[in-house]
Structure formats: structure tokens, C-alpha cells
Image 1 (tube, protein in one colour):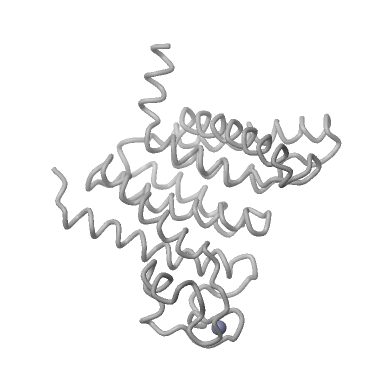
Image 2: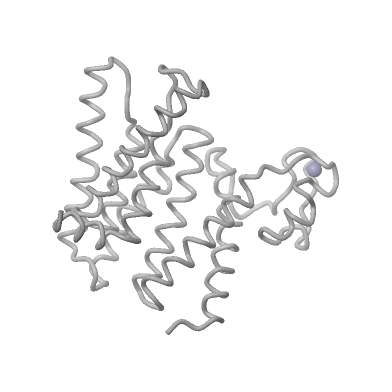
Length: 255
Ligand SMILES: [Zn+2]
């Protein structure tokens, strides 16, 4: 049974972590500290008061503008907060109050930060993916739902698939199709989810990436030669897999 109070608390926790994730998304690619200084408006540099820093609510109350200089605040801020709150909630509803839920919400937060940094800056930050590989592997010794062998295989299979496709792509298309950042990202997800799940995650990632690419080119938003970051699609694929991987596997076996 789920208790209403737990549902509310886990959602609010997601919103708060989402708010902190926004700081990471903005500062990590700029090599700034994520602790200090306190949040400020990027335009007028005025400090954001705690009352204006409430996830979701402040954005609505301020109508998406800085209280001081009225500069528009990016819609990305409330989006990241809401996304984080929702993913925490769904993970809790599926896995209950468990170690697996705790590990998965940590992984999800890291993946959301990586996805938005990749969307904004076209880089997958090593400062998250490299420690992520190590943390995912170490955790596999202490949890019951994934063995350390499966975790190690996940690193090799995840990183290996992207590496091979990346090398193949650069030979065929004579340009870098996938960067080293994507290799480390896939290895990190593999460390947390194991070899089966990383294969499903990457398959879904390629599928979504291809569909999005076709749509963006047909809608003339992007040109064929434009680079579309692949990280967000790997992250989307891995979210679906970590939530519904078992259903996908049993559907595929029955098929
Ligand atoms: Zn301002």
C-alpha cells in the first residue's frame, strides 16, 4: 500500500532535487561551483530570495520573470523540476520504499542533469559520467536486484555498442557520429542497469533519436548536416527501460 504522505513527500523531494539540478545544468558546463555563490539572476545578478526560489510555484507566481529586472526566466527551470518530481513519483509507485527506489532516483537525477547539459551545450560532462560508472559498479555489490557481474557487463556492452557504432559511423559518414561522452554515458547507465537493460535503453534511444531527427529535418527545424545531441535520447530510452524493462523483456520473449 502506498501512503498519501509518502507520495507527496517523494514528489516534493523530486521538485527540490530538480531545483538543485537546474543549478548543476547551468554551472557544470561553465566550470562554476555548484555550492557557491547562492542562486542569482543571470542577467541583473541580483540574489534570488528563498521565497522566489520555490520549485514550480515561484515560476508561476513570478509569471516566469525575474522579480528585479523582469528578464524572462527559461521555461527549462520549471520543466526540469516537474520532470524530476514526476520521475521520482513513478519510480516510487513501481518499486515502493526500497533500496532500488533510492538508487534509481539518484541515477535519474544524474541522467536528467546530463540530458539537459547535452541539449544546451552538446557535451556529456565527464564529472558526472565517470564517477557514475564507478558508483554504479560499487553499488552492485550491495544490492540484490543486480549482480556485480551484470553491472560490469553493462559497462562493457553499453560503452562497447556506442564505441563500435561511433567508429563505424565516422568511417561511413566521414564525421564524428557519436562522441566519447556518449560512450561514457552508456557505460554509466550499463553499470546501474546491467547488460540486458542497457541494450534495450540504447535500442530505444536510437529509435527515438531517429524519429526525432526525421521529424526535425522534415519540419525544417534542423538541416541534415546539423548535429543532434544523442545523450537525451539515451536518457529517455533508459528511463523507459528502468521503469518498464521487465514488461518489455517478457513482451519480447512472448512475441
Ligand atoms: Zn534579474
